[in-house]
Length: 167
Image 1 (cartoon, rainbow, N blue to C red):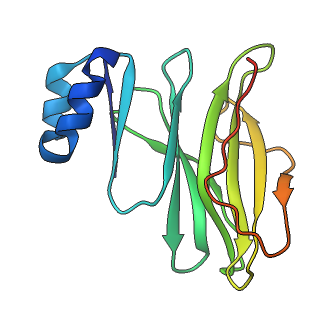
Image 2 (cartoon, rainbow, N blue to C red):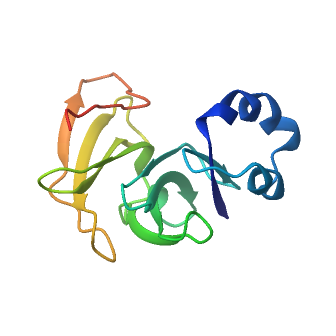
């Protein structure tokens, strides 16, 4: 289950101090705001969140599926985080092919898109690739472009990919 609440940046310090002890959905609702999003997930791995200018929230999470192995699911919310639906799933039919450590960024400009970087590796390998895909924002489910391998080295296992844009 995913829940997302937006908070004013001024409550960031309060949220960081109190989140472990007090942060329930009701508590987060009670302090309101619209500048910072807190993500609460149950049973999911590493995640990344970004918000489009129209308020649409995108969340990429890593999940271990017993059939397809480690995969990335991208959720979308158009109601301020009250409800999320699956927008896309990145996986491989081979359960030894793992997708993990997502990093998501919404880029808006001449062409609005969602960019997703992630680690892709074979469960039996000692190395991994950092990959990047993108999709247009304003569609009901993602249509990812061609996967670009941004970084790969033999016997090197990359974690936590990050990128930045000039938009």
